[in-house]
Length: 134
Image 1 (cartoon, rainbow, N blue to C red):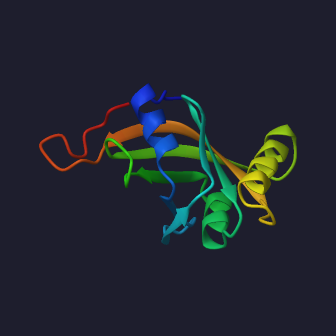
Image 2 (cartoon, rainbow, N blue to C red):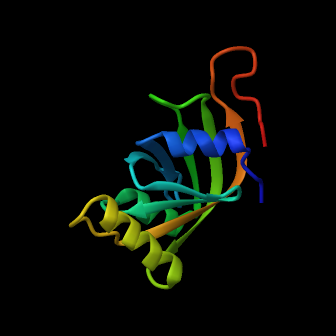
């Protein structure tokens, strides 16, 4: 797996909403805003599923996703691709469920998407836009 730099992890921690792109087995695309996104370590991003419909179905059929990291308070612009596993039980899922409940009382985390980073790309306009960073 690829490892995010400290700068990329800082950008993830600074953001609030991140577009998550997925595709069905047949290639039908979907993009949805995600709020429960946490950099767990340089190789792993956790994404809480509170409201997903198409996104969760897509990653169950096609376990790849892309997270777009850019917005207010974020230095840089990154496209992070990775392999996704969905968890609905176990220690990691319970930890995420507690994090979501603490952040938004009454909100229920239905599952945890564990994204293992495989590639990171530059998204800022300019001569290096689209360059692979990791």
